[in-house]
Amino acid sequence: MRIRLQNGLLYVAVEVSYRGRCLELDNVLLDTGSAGTVFSIDRLLDIGLEYAAEDAVHCIHGVGGTEFVFSKTVERLALGDIHVNDVEIEIGGMNYGFEMDGIIGLDFLLRVGAVIDLAVMEVRV
Image (cartoon, rainbow, N blue to C red; front, side, top):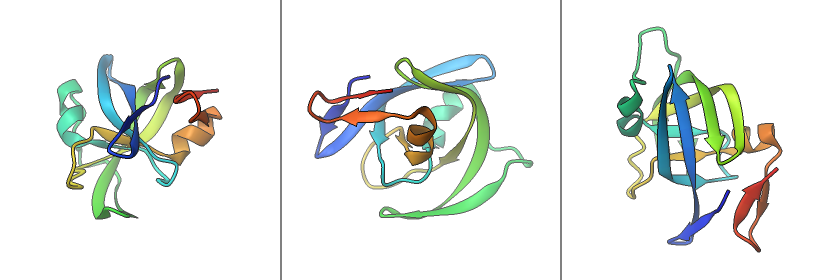
């Protein structure tokens, strides 16, 4: 999977599958400094993913500040050919002052054994 460098940050394209519907997100930050994977609620509404009363809500902290998110299990999360099935993601407002669809965090990267090769700007396993 190709990595795109934009404004000094690494971005990738990701596909999220939920209840049989798939969404391609092209503007996802690749962030080894983020413990978790989080996506913008505004984007995931397109495939019917929304908050339900039974969803766990918690607070996450990062360089961008503090934010309340909820968790959902999606059928598939794919970074090109690299994917996991039945994975829990976090969903929130993601109002960090710049446009992005989500963040691929260390949880996903460790689970798939990702290798980030900056010499050729790609992620592989």
